[in-house]
Image 1 (cartoon, rainbow, N blue to C red):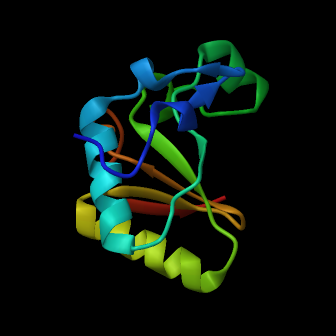
Image 2 (image 1 turned 90 degrees about the horizontal axis):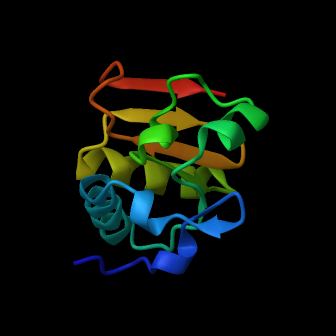
Amino acid sequence: MIKYFIKEEFTCDGKNCFDKVNKKSLSKLDLAREFAGIPFTITSSWRSKSYNMEIGGANNSAHLRGTAFDIACMSSHQRMVIVSALLEAGFTRIGIAKTFIHADDDIELPQEVIWLY
C-alpha cells in the first residue's frame, strides 16, 4: 500500500501514467518519503520514448521503464534530507541537480552511483 502518493501525482505528456510506474520502485519511494518526513513533489516519473527524446533524456533512461523519479528540491537542507532518505530506503542511483533530485533503482543500469547534472 502506498501511503504518501496519489496516482494523480504521476503524469507524462500531460496524461496520467501511474499505471506505468514500477510498483516496487514506487514502494521504495514511499518509504523514502516516510524517512524524510517532508513532502516529495514528483516532477517526472515514467516517460514515453518520444517525450524522453524531446527533453534530452538518456537513450537508456530508467524513466522509460518506470523505475525513476525526479523530486523537486529547492534548498541545500532539503537536498540533504531527500538524499539521506533515498539512501536509507535503498536507492543506489541518485542524480543531483540544482532544482531536483533523481532517484531510480533500475537494475539494468550501473549501481551505487551519484552524479551531478
